[in-house]
Amino acid sequence: MSPTPFHALACPIDLSPLRPEGKSWVCPQNHSFDTAREKYVNLLPVQFKKTKAPGDSRQMLKARADFLQAGAYDFILDAVCAPIAGSMSRSSSDPFTVIDAGCGNGYYTSGLKSWLEKAGYGGAFSMLGYDISKEAILMAAKRFNGIAWAVATSKRIPVQEGSVDALVSIFSYPVFGEFRRVLKPAGMLVLVQPGPNHLIELKQRIYSAPKIKPGLQNNHGGLFMESDEIHISRRIAGLTRRNMADLVNMTPHAFMGSRQKIEEFLDNPGDSITADIFIRVLHPV
Image (tube, helix red, strand yellow):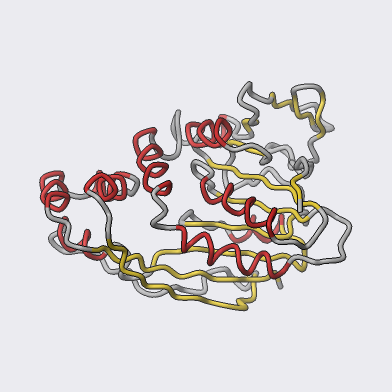
């Protein structure tokens, strides 16, 4: 398979189709959005922002990029890619369209692109990664080619209705109504969410009373039918102090927990840490 341009963008203001005009994207009502020099488009109008610079900070993004590059979470990428590659049609002449919702710095998006290129199903595919953080999209656009990048929010996905074959949401907040709107009737939603024991060793060390979240709830309001659920609990060993610091700093625990206790944990983190995740595969009803 080979990547093709993503042409299913929609105006974030009125959700009408966007068409490329030079270096801009324009809708029938003449709302216009420029493509940045780094080859991404900002589809997050100011009225959709709650803060001047929403999303993860540059420090969190840098830590996440460094940690993911070390490969400790590549098992998550493999588990996400497998059902998507398995759903691709060998005979369809239309490009297989994929969205990574809340894509961060694009690490998983790029990994999924590599999977699809190697899948051997023939045909073409198009990919969009979007995130509410402009800093995240800047990092992704500078590093990864062959993917469309946009600053956007899942509360109003700037994508045309019923145009997407597969949507992935990895550790990001799911907005099921919008996910359902953009997916094709036979489309697929793949969610990655933390389990109750995710990073439990860290939580027990930096909080006096760590909150243990319950198992997953079917909170999609009947918009989806769940076809598979995979629970993976893996103890990750061999992390350096730098790896562990990146892991802490890429999560909200970096500013929610006691800084002193975080430093004490990093000085003596133990020989492993638990990655506890659920992967859910859902289809529109």
